[in-house]
Length: 151
Image (tube, rainbow, N blue to C red; front, side):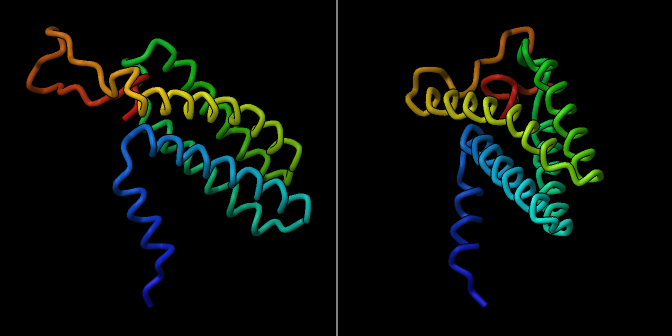
């Protein structure tokens, strides 16, 4: 059966640029954290686990897309991502809604910062991808990371 909502979402994701995809991931991560916390407070372990596992999947995807060599702050952000995954695993195992809330407090400012960076890119104030330096122009290493080592 044709589902227009699913088709719209699939089209939105497949046509979004790197900055938009990143903000979409953060938006969904925050939604999963909110839903996971709410489910834990309602003692719905099944729903909580689904949302928290999906949140872990998103953070794992963010970790995989972060090139720590392209941005000075990349290693620190990777550490934050590792912390968030660990906290989400512990919150899920221990059914700890407060831990989810505290983890969301770490993620929310990051989401806001990425939204701000995406808006700057959309306005054209900053190039979406930096040009490769002459020393990086090797056939086996094409520049692939956008602003701040993602993309």
